[in-house]
Length: 367
Image (cartoon, rainbow, N blue to C red; front, side, top):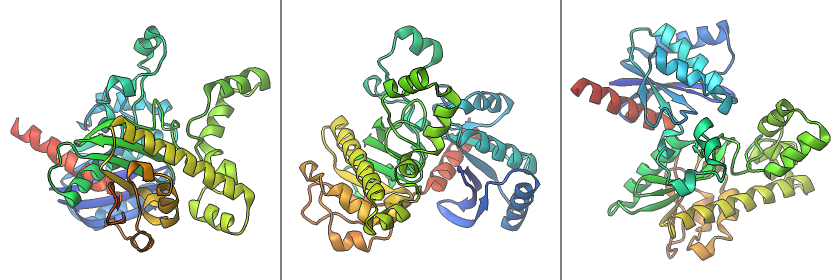
């Protein structure tokens, strides 16, 4: 079964066709809406040949979607209702879904949710300390994101380590423009850093990560900032961009090397939150067997990996400098005598989506 994977990000639309885990073709298109994108998508699909099924990455599934699901009008309606919870991604993902469905109307399509991998978080990890009536009325809980990436990392790490796998404890670090950690025990997510929305947790490219809610209330009440400006600032003008004036980690590291104090502060804040988050994920599992870096920063920045691990020796983490400096995914970069094994793994959300599509449609065919 050849699966077309549609992955709409905040700045690009990635299309890829997979036979099994093998990519047959891929296109990375700008996320421009309207006729330009329609023409580009049509051309890409036409060049790629026959497609048997389509898998769409959808950021937020809420409580309604705890696993991948075949797309129909009712599913589409319920996904639209979740757009406010992931404004950077969800509306664009839905527009891409509608476009591809229009171009391939007879091809079965499946929605694969970033939240689904975390849907069975233990109550202690998923529950906010809010009144019961609030939590029930508005379904307020920690959902977690990047689940497709974390799920792939979990399976790939288990392949690299080998059996026994049932109790393997992995701290998965998805570090890209968006960033989150997951504590994965025996293939199951037991904690993560993102919460009700993708704003919670680590410092990201343009997103703030966790901020004292009292600070936001103060800005609204005493400074008069409207909620729309607060939301826009937290999503688009914070994180590395807010700290250093540059959302690209490579540029921030270069500026730090050149002596820029704001860049130095940005990197230190980023690493402080990252180290603390890794330790928290390990604590959720009473330790860890593997630390894994994935995503654009996680895969490409040997310096961030090295500096993050430098203060995690108490967990048993130690990186081999030569292996880390020359790492090309999928690679092990931990020191040979380290208690915790450290890996760099290529992010393959497309593979995870294609696997989910085949599993779901295969189950439907057998029913």
